[in-house]
Amino acid sequence: MSTQTTPVSGLSWKEVCEDPHLRDLPYKIETNERGQIVMSPTYAWHGKFAFRIAQRLEEIHPEGESSIELAIRTAKGTKVADAVWCTADRWAQIKDAYDAPVAPEICVEVRSPTNTDVEMAEKRALYFEAGAEEVWICDSEGHLRFFDAEEERSASNRVPDFPDQLDV
Image 1: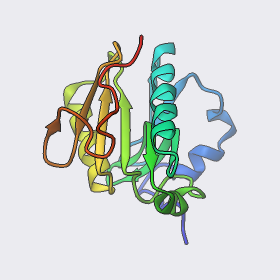
Image 2: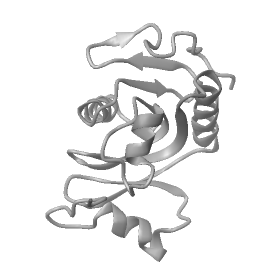
Image 3: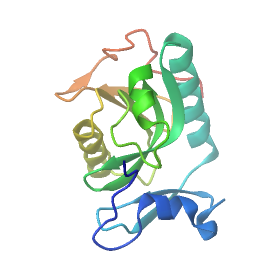
Image 4: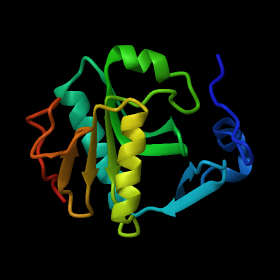
C-alpha cells in the first residue's frame, strides 16, 4: 500500500517529510496540486489554539484520537489540519501514513491573519471531499465556526457541547 502518490511534478509528501533541509522550519508546510511546497508563517497563539482544541476533543471523546498538525492527502496536494479528531477505526487507517489517505471526521483550521475567505472555503471543500464530516474554523480571538458538508452550524453535530469560544 502506497502512502503517497507522486504529483505530476514536484515532491511527494514523503519526500517533503524526509528532506533534512525542511526540518525545524518556523513555518507550516503544505503542498499544492503540483507538488510545490507552500509555507505559511504562524503565530504563537496559532499553535496554542490548535493544541487546546485537540486536547479538549480528546477529553470529551476519549474513545477516539485527536492530534495536531495532521497531513491529509487531498485532490489539491497535502494540506495540514491544525487539529483533528477521529474515531479509532479511522485512526487505524491513517496512523502510519505520511499523509492521511482519508480525512479525520473533524478537521480544524486555526485561521491566521493572512488566510483569505477563499482559501478557507477551499480547504473546507478539500477536507469534506477527503472524508471529513465536520470542519471547524478558529479565528485569532479563539472564536470557533462549525461546518458540515452542507452549511455552517451554530454548534458541532458530533460534539454539540464544544464551546464556540476558547480562552484567549
